[in-house]
Image (cartoon, rainbow, N blue to C red):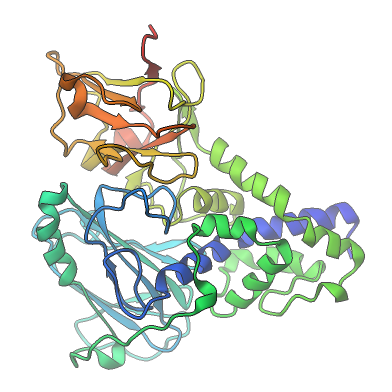
Length: 444
């Protein structure tokens, strides 16, 4: 057994490493615990749930949701056989369909940027599948037996819903053995123990460390680690955590029992500190220009991204500058008014679209009088005579001439905001373009 301080270090590292897998599992349970597909975020395994409308302030399935695209989400299980997915021609509409393994690695991302807007069909297979796939169907291998598909289709507000719904309904899935047989979807099942109104992030925070590691060991059986992960598996075994096997604290040394039981607090703080401190901090915005969706052995970075926005796209698909403080370095306060000024020619550079989204202190949408949680280039914004743009961030409505450019703040408490740059141009990816500082009203 290693020295006590090393045992504590290993236990904390193990919690950080396991965090995305546990968070993914709790999210999977929350959103597959239904008998049939819904128009929110829930559907049985291997079936798509197509969002019929943008989420609102009651939405808690994931933190920092978007109201720019209509989601098409599916939790897949390909441990027994491949799943065939067919995507129709999008008619030029921008969409992306990133697919994540259970460790939150994006291993493929079909869509406008990568595979184009034409129709395509592929079979998604598990890590051990070795049989053949029918001709005319592309083959994609998942590193884990389960995972998450998070489709996003560009939607220009409620008036665009019907057209997007037609595209969503034309996305088809079926187990390989049922492909082409026009069989009805298999009904799901409901586990009462999985029901929770709390976001999965909060569910994880409420778990004690032994329960956390017990769940981790259960999930890892069907979701093997990546090759780069075996060194940390070896370290975990040194203190008695054997992934895939039940954890019996009573059989461990007192040092290991204490270290595992107390690992949650330092690990959670490390994860949250990673979120607060990752990326480049300029003008009050923190932007992560390093890899998202492909983490290697950077487990702290991976856990920080999972905590802040589980299911985040790769930076080539979307860039997410996060506004944390104003131009004076002060956290945003709902009791104050703010202005975001973009000079002419300095709007977010994208090939897709851009938006600015408001989040309350729980990283969720905040109720407001006009039901607006996001504002961006698809809205009818009012530009200044010189071609520049001002966005107004405040709790109460500004004057009528500014209302089109108003992003409501929460009724109370602190808040943060996210820019979303879908299909960002090179000057956004390399940091040449940077979002402007956000000034408190009345500041010079």
